[in-house]
Image (cartoon, rainbow, N blue to C red; front, top):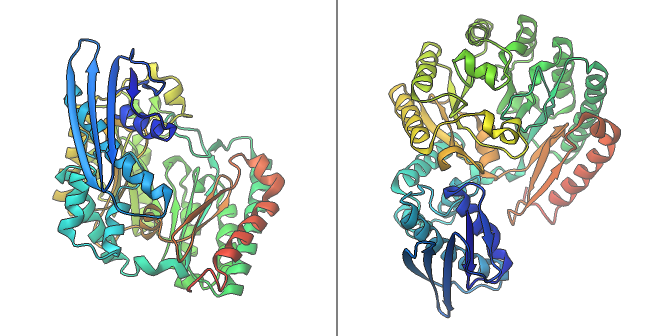
Length: 503
């Protein structure tokens, strides 16, 4: 689909227009050159004074026309960036409206294409804006449907009940520890994940670098008197390494990090059931870690084979029961809507199997075609559900979780997500993942340690986010982990200096 845009010469409009077009069409090309020979041509007219007034007229190759206009009050600002943002929202509003009219497809998330829609509602809450006014703005300005606004509000309320001090966590930090190894790589995955077989030398070197990072960051935290809110071991699959290596890693955590016994939550992803052993569960229990993930993704064996997960459905169930018997009191499980070859019958089966286990939390993902994944590179090999079927599966998940006492507590979205849906974390009461809330709402600094780990430094006064990522491949990480550690400490010193912090 080629869309010719007339009346918007500013290149800054190209990306938001592209992202919205991608909600409707595959392989969209946006042309701002002024030509009118696209499959669709959209003419924009704009007037800016005390009001921003934008109109759009869509014409297709058959001469069919759709027109829409939107106006909103211009809020005076000295920031050119904020000024343009207001104009961009108005342009996106009319653009989405004419595309919805032409296609007949309603985008329930409106003009939002970002990962974290709930941040908008958190911002309103922090500013003391009444709920009715905040909801009205989301509906009228951003074109979000009541269904999604209500979901957002439910999640915001739950998050603030779980973490009453969510808006004042800047004086602490959380830690993400990345273990970049898995038994095999799943077809939909773009995380740093390397098949662990035959890589013992690489694993040893990586763990040496990770221990170094933990020591140095721990020293800095102790020196500054900064506490840790949560620690999250992700990857990869952190339980891919041996029980002995896990034991040494958690010992390092207790030795290096300040007041580990006061950390609110420590989570270890054990997502691949084929990595779980009694010995590894004993190590987790030894170090008082009882929150883990065991991720079936699907309870259909043919699906697991198609996506490259080399474990059986039976193994998932057996390892879940083993973990439960060995003291794991907070188990999360993941399901994915829209995996290749799966429709409503297969997803219904997965929910029925989940009912037999009743994990403390269930994260329902919607398949996303991530740019670098094997699935995206070979899309023609993988038949997936259409928008309507994906929506019905999401409704099944919503109904099932509500019936069984689970409530939504965090959500995020991804580009190229099936049906323009979302990923939602549900949990039983008091079993929510604090880390998942913190990382999604971006209200606290998270220090990333290990291969492929991203750090997100949140300025305690302005909220400005500084990103820093360790390299994704073990060799690059092993070659320069000392330098990356120093760079992180430099950023932390600036962030938590007396001038920059209110801690």
